[in-house]
Image (cartoon, rainbow, N blue to C red; front, top):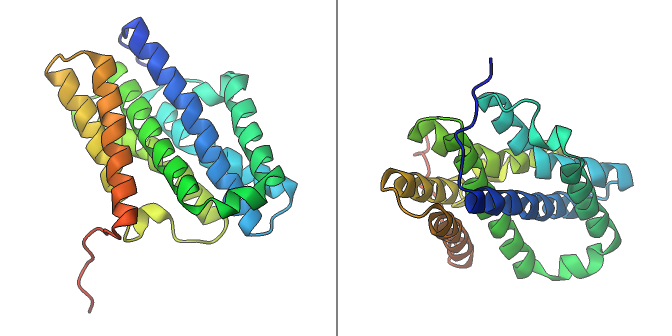
Length: 214
């Protein structure tokens, strides 16, 4: 029998839901934009949008026993992801000219999915470390699937501060729960931590330590 979620405060539950939907649109837009750059057709744009927007959340829900996954029984997730893909398809020229704003949207999606994913994992009774990893999986999994579908090394495996930023946000959420702090401000601070670290790392060209060569 799948585990039952621990009841969350109504305001936190509403905030995580809003974060989930905004993250779906933002990552769907990133998937659709990448598909347009790769000159895929409309179907390909929609597939990459769906993969980027939903894959991480689906895997998270399967792992914590939240069945069926939220995006597969709530049509709103699919509609938001498809709307993001159509937006990328129709307005790719102005979107492509917005290099930094698109990067900011990607950082926002990373932040929102991290907090929503970690918060949901905690609500299903997971201990801190698995919850942090599932928060990062929610945030990074869709982008990894998106990149693999176009034969690119996933961004999370490159030299950028990406997964590390996600883990920082998850750590903030977990620390707030352990210290019994108000959950909504903690969620907001966690998302801001991810967002700021991701944006600053891009602007300053920070990268994760690399393994020494042979």
